[in-house]
Image 1: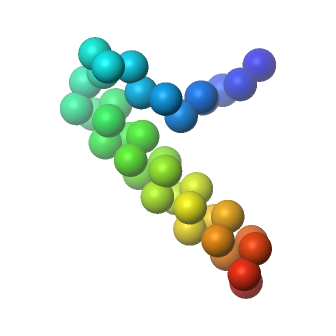
Image 2: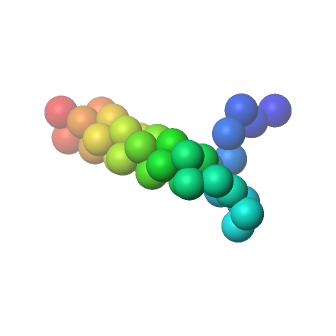
Image 3: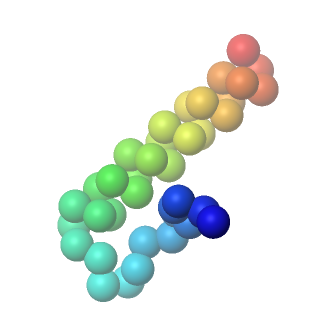
Amino acid sequence: EAVSSGVTPADATAEQFRRDVAYAHSWFRNITHDIFG
């Protein structure tokens, strides 16, 4: 079972959107670092 799908519901609060944006940025930094070092 997935902990987070990364898809914010349309009726999410501003805080939920903020957390998803932070998660996306963190994911991108981490995957880029893992691939390219």
